[in-house]
Image 1: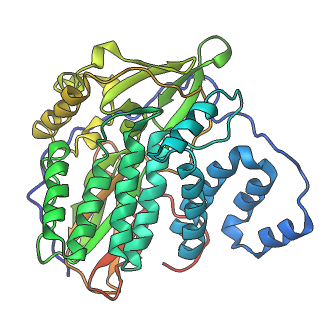
Image 2 (image 1 turned 90 degrees about the vertical axis):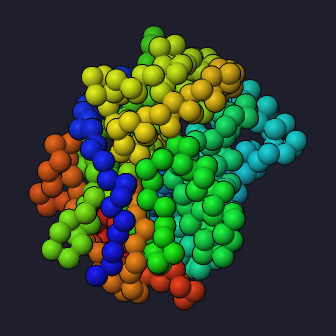
Amino acid sequence: MWSIDKTWLKPVLATALASTMVGCANGPKVHDRSTLAPSEQSLVDSKPAVLQADFQNLFEEGQRNKVLNLMEIGVKAYRAGYRDEAKNTLSQARLEIENVYADTDSARKARSIWYEEAEKDFKGEPYERAMVYMYLGLIYLEEGDYGNARASFLAGLLQDAFAEEQQNSTDFALLLYLAGWSAMQMGSDQLARDHFAELKLYRPDAPIPDLDDNALLIIETGKSPRKLGDGVGHHQLVYRRGKNFKDIAAEMRNGEEWSPVYPVEDIFFQASTRGGRAIDRIVEGQIQFKENTRAIGSTLSTVSQDSTLAGFSAAAGGAVGAGFAAISLISVAADGMSASANTRADVRYWEGLPDTIHLMPVTAADGEPVTVRFIDEYGQPIPGLTDSTEFKFDGRGAGLAFATSRRPHSGANQ
């Protein structure tokens, strides 16, 4: 049985998940056309059943929602075990993103023109673009392509650093961790130390891999953050945590016991902040930051009494104390950032994303099974909500197991 490092375990806050819904959810469907060409319909019919409706949307909704639909197909294919389909669609999404969000003069010019359009094609918010690179990086890890995996995670960090057209700092701990893991597998010990040292600024209690750890377990819980229209005419954009889910934590079976898995990233936190500064709303293309949370760390110091910050224990790495101090560092670093942004209010969002991602480095063997159960806000297992997967090794000595509370009902074998 594989072993785990439990030194990171500390008391974790029980947090409320309720969020008040404001405005409409994901906006009305916009179909460029309702009839597919015979070649397109043939392609849809050739896809796995679990993906056919999404490919139908891809053709019907056209260029305006192309990237959004590629994102939805990619994550659903990944969870269902169709890795080639996931890699192809997410790579297409990445190329579309990089046409506009590269760190080049031509891309900056394209962004300037882009934001003058009243109806723009979907390219996603910084957190959504970063997650495209995250899933692609996991696929590269499974293939044993550690260099491209690390490059993908670093590219995700760059997307997180783009607060629209302003270049700000990044605080995406999940991507820092995975970049460090990739560097370890490459044998680049100094790079790995650098990545994990930066990670410790945000997650001081994160379980850094030991030399004996040869595999990584990654688990998704919850549902995507939501972008909603607010105000008169819904011209304002606000972020809300996902709804209609109970799973906020995960445990893995370890022999006869269950062990908690470390919550490394709160996706809602990434959606609703820029460089650690909490967004109140986006009005007429300008981000308005919450004045009373300019220093997020000071607000987090009283998180146990503040229900408005539900879920931040996950954002702080599940720690009480040291983790809050780490996020305080983010707010101090970000305090001088510009509050301006040029994005237009757009309530389309990547519904397939999780709420929280958990991980744990372990010592495992190829094909070793993993059973995961999901935990509610009261620390109790959710009846009937489990996932089973196994560690798959890449032929170069490293393994990965992926579990999720959002497994499709049908799909390829894991």
